[in-house]
Image (cartoon, rainbow, N blue to C red; front, side, top):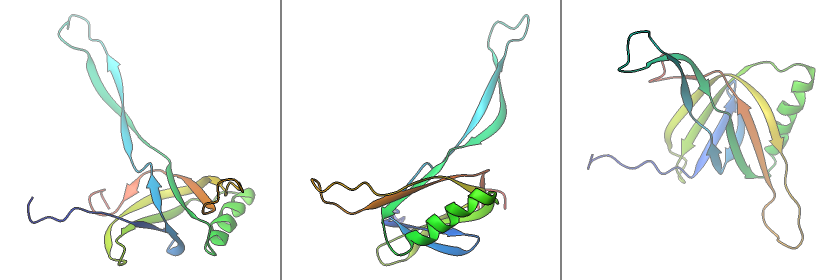
Length: 145
């Protein structure tokens, strides 16, 4: 463990079908959970069977200040009005120097929410946007292909 570096990411690059949608400051929701069904067996009073059923993947949210790349995100999102084609996404965690730390591949991605900036003259700050993605699982090294 002493020889390993701790992965400190400062930005996240989102690519949809290989098309770069820009760099984001935060990424939240990368995860999955196995649903468990409990079954009681007659005559077995020692425990309840815990049976795994399906895997549920949480939505992923990426946020950043509004930039020229924001047009690509809103254009992709607006295209879902005519039918949401499921895409492949890659989220890359990168250092300040742009070095790749690691990445996650997402299967069958559709955008489910875009939140634009909140404007308030009383508290000036960067105009932020957030895009939320639903997916059907991970792919790549460690995820079975």
